[in-house]
Image 1 (cartoon, rainbow, N blue to C red):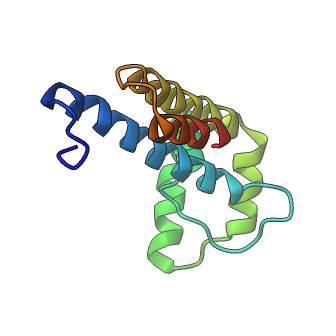
Image 2 (image 1 turned 30 degrees about the horizontal axis):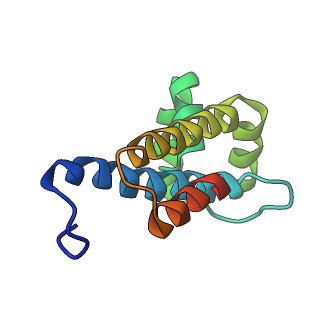
Amino acid sequence: MMLTDHSKDLEQPAYTIGRSIALSQQIQTDISNFKSGAFGPFSLISAPMMFYIQDNVDLYQTLMKHVEKDDINYDELRNLVITGNAIEKSLELKDEFVLNGMEALKKFPENEAKNALINILKTI
């Protein structure tokens, strides 16, 4: 912000833009582990997993037992997540972050940097 001579009142919107881009990209990466043809380990703290566990609380205890034994069947777990609505909820959260970033960008003047950030958010 100091490098571009923006006022202090733009610090929070700039933070929101950065956070929105980072988290929406992370969710997109999380979701890619559940697409057709995906296999092998994935993060158990990904957005789709969190949403799935939120709707299937009993799975948490079972999952923790498998974590302790280091015998997680990721493919079986992936299939469980895909059958629920966790992917849809993850996409909704990603879209919410994108919208928050777009809204924060409205506080900045029109220029190439703003247009580039808009394009980044549109492609996520």
